[in-house]
Image (spheres, rainbow, N blue to C red):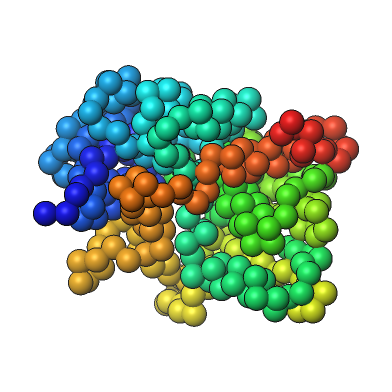
Length: 342
Ligand SMILES: NC(=O)c1ccc[n+]([C@@H]2O[C@H](COP(=O)([O-])OP(=O)(O)OC[C@H]3O[C@@H](n4cnc5c(N)ncnc54)[C@H](O)[C@@H]3O)[C@@H](O)[C@H]2O)c1
């Protein structure tokens, strides 16, 4: 019988439910407990997988389960993550690490002082497409990166209907963590300065008080990249996602479109670019999508005593870049990211 790691999951929403799905399926993991403030949801997920449930994170801190995912809303990662890190647990935190710079610093401090393992779920690092871009840059296809453009936006239904806490987040907290981390990881450079412009009003008029869209230029060591995000793409867009990227170097250029996987469905009333279905097994009973890889990888790191990719410090740098975006929007001035991190 192979060694199995007991794991628990905090936060069982639209995305969070992927964590118990993967742990229940993975032969090296034993899903022991799930936790959600919503008791009915916690009971229902526990019944599906035959595990324990609770609504109280402090019960998890004193339990014999040593490894947890935290998949609460963007603004609510801090309390459960802090409680679990303080208890010396291994913690996989969803992106963004936090929506507050001081909180991100505190979680990073706790993680770096703990003997437990911790990681941010930057799952796009496991995407085969983005992996190809990283390989190409490492193999010198581009030469030295000099300029980039990355757009990751969502259809307005994400802000209006999917997330009850959308007004406490925004396209910046929800989507920039992915693209900003990817670029930093791919080009291997640190962010220096950020300058941003944005628009508000469309979502606010619908009762979601956050930014509609933002464009931010981030100067890395020797390459500047424009990051663009929006939560007001019309729902008639063929994909819920709108993702395009270009990276230019002194020897080459790479373009990536991630919203169109090469297949479209069209009938009299709609045209769509379907996504690989998430949240369920394929017809052969497997969970092979790359978005599930970080959970299994984290279990492997704990069992095999390896240091995971995406340490909380990478999450902190992401939070600092987004904090710089917000400060630049407020002041109309460029903001020094390294000063924020000091
Ligand atoms: N890795 C990714 O690419 C990816 C994709 C989508 C979402 N996410 C992230 O996953 C997180 C969760 O997103 P979601 O779509 O599942 O949200 P959701 O709103 O559908 O679910 C959140 C759940 O957390 C519960 N909750 C809130 N505070 C809690 C607390 N203190 N303790 C226990 N439970 C609590 C809520 O009751 C709810 O069931 C977000 O941070 C989101 O950005 C990551």
